Amino acid sequence: MSFEKKIQELGITLPEPPKPVAAYVPGVKVDKYIYTAGQIPFVNGELKYKGKVGAEVSVEEAYEAAKICALNCLSIVKSLAGSLDNVEKIVKVVGFVNSADGFNQQPQVINGASELLGQIFGEAGAHARSAVGVNQLPMDATCEVELIVKLK
Image (cartoon, rainbow, N blue to C red; front, side, top):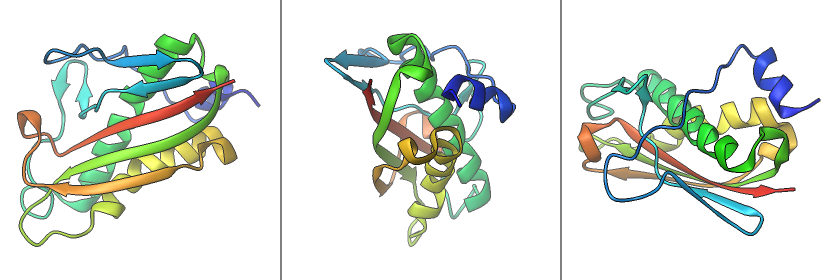
């Protein structure tokens, strides 16, 4: 099954690629690889999840935020690759979690992105990953996710 059909089957509509909020481009294609800039949980131009996980934001809410970040990354991948069907492999996911003092469940948060990628891409979605706790993110975003993707 094509990845484009799979995303439709899951009832997912990719957003428009988010506009940069600083001096960078949303993604770069080098040879057969796409590197996305870190994406925060923007929905229709508004930050949907703000605050520290383990204080103002629950793990469950942050998990949903990570899914939104991954969808924003995929919209960038699609814009640079022409189609998600041109993806060979999700190589790496890097996730940053705006963490309250003592919060240590960053992997559970970034699972939102990882599990979504697995649903869409199956075995091609199995990836290496970092899930890092930080004391602040731009605009007080709950989390930020970036991807490295190999194209066919």
